[in-house]
Length: 179
Image 1: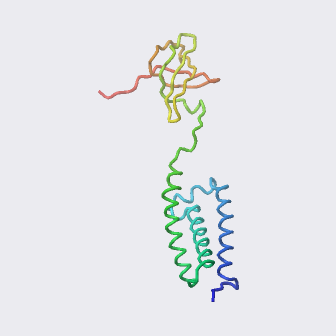
Image 2 (image 1 turned 180 degrees about the vertical axis):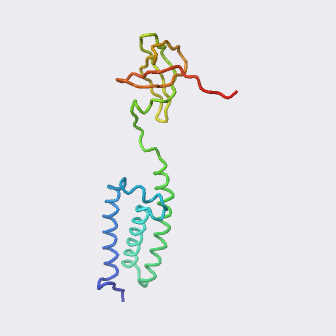
Image 3 (image 1 turned 90 degrees about the vertical axis):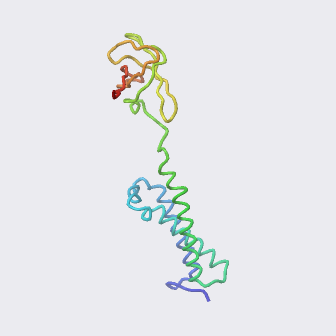
């Protein structure tokens, strides 16, 4: 005889929990940016980990009740153990790498200010040249002028001071070195 809880067959209860956890997981994906700080306290309090655990447990228990003749308690224990293993794998092989991945490969010209580039087309007085900026996203070639209207030779390192209408104002860069 199969177990009942709250007047509902345990198999049916597992199915309801699976559906609710699936919907909650979908909603969490949509609003996860608002709840981002919750998982910082402990990996076990992360809503993604908790929802995955509930989903794995209910899905495994539902299938166990459906396909085996084991007791409901042994199916629940087996489902919890399987869910712990799957949750562990999900956390360490999916969630941790995703969190440490670069958020975006997009950039703005303003975000490049403060970086160091190299002159690839000499910058004349009262004129434009071109600089090469090496970033994690690749190399970017940008139009540049001298910040104080000075000429800068080919191959010199320059500091990107500001940007205006896609033109970078640069100053020759001399890094500080200990002697």
